[in-house]
Length: 594
Ligand code: OXD
Ligand code: MN
Image 1 (cartoon, rainbow, N blue to C red):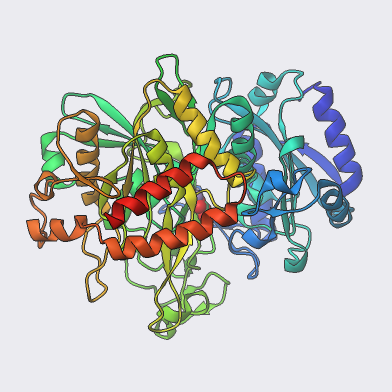
Image 2 (spheres, rainbow, N blue to C red):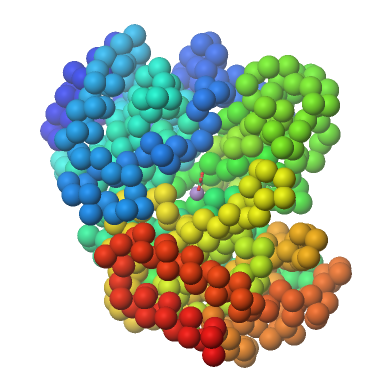
């Protein structure tokens, strides 16, 4: 398929290492994909679902010990430890190559090596980057065919260039003790072994489009961020674009595919999805930031997806979809997960493939008692999505009006606030955090700092990453405004105060009004907060002006506690923490003590 000598030499040396029975190049054709689906069905790697209800859809089950990303086994292997920084796990590249070489040696024996040439982003766009993944898993091939742009045109675009990310994957024996997800940013290389779970093995996604790309972005003057991109179209046809970063499990896919509440729908507003997970961002000639989604599909969390929480995502899963670790309704060969609109099936297999007993379901032990694994997934084509943006394939990306950071905070963060400048906005991103509810009864939320939702995904030193953010602001004449939102404030009884889901659009409307200079705000120690009456609550049951006041208060005591936690985190990041962000932290503390 190519004469590129860098590609051919690399594949030859990798094949000598892993020793496959044969090599098959993936050309992106439907015929080849169907042949692979048929093989996977014959070996039990895939199970074909009801063709009428779920045309061309399949179910896959991973090994029981292999159901999520493994942050403790994910390494950034730069030559010096400082370049990876204290937030990342680091291994010396020589040591890591040696260790993994032993694990890879002969690991493809009896298997085929699939060669997947793929593009992150529209083939040929100046935003886009090319990777080649070698894998021994048909499941990986079929997922990559959905999540990225694969095939011969990618190799044509690469030509004879050495500029591609070299990804080597083997599910090997799925041995948990020898599972490694290793990144060598200085070599444009990713090695992943002993896993078959998407986030660890679809190397275009977190490994390339975030970890390697963030490193390349710093070197080349652009950004790779863990952000959704959405377009909000006003009745006059004008669309404004927003990118938003949230830690995992904060409803990113739901926000990306939001359905406007009735008041806005009636008036003619629409929301378009450009991406639900990753944004590559560059400065345009007009001095604005442009964002592009490098992916071609969605790898979404299935449980909780229903017609209320995310109608568009649900529709996206109805054809040409691969489900991983969901439940199987044996009566009609359809899928089921907790939180679906339909009642629990009486005759079903759980995510492990065992007979499932709905009466044993225990919220405190979902992994062992639920039908679908809590992290079960759907892999679906972006073009299946009813609200996919007409700009999805625009090689130039879309201009950003606002950037939003978000977290899950019970008390500290108000529903929304606006930063005072790019530098302050970078600070706001750097102090992002989420509270996890500890499993033990009565335990309080544990704060995990997750700057820009990138804690597990920055491919270099976090201090340098913050400095790069500040640098990008200096290079951008007309930067987007930066906001922070929190959909998860709770009342004294622990109930969420804000309805969330589609109603989050009410907050987006305030954000866009601020960007257009059309609405005032109140200055507080943390930034600008809306006047309670400026968020439209028309048609919202049980939400009053008093509710809005409660959602928008800035509680100095909990912020001062947070400041101490931020100081600890900054110290952990270490020497490369930019002085400007320490200045912002000092300003915040002084404002709170005024
Ligand atoms: C994801 C994640 O799977 O952020 O997108 O964990
Ligand atoms: Mn993600």
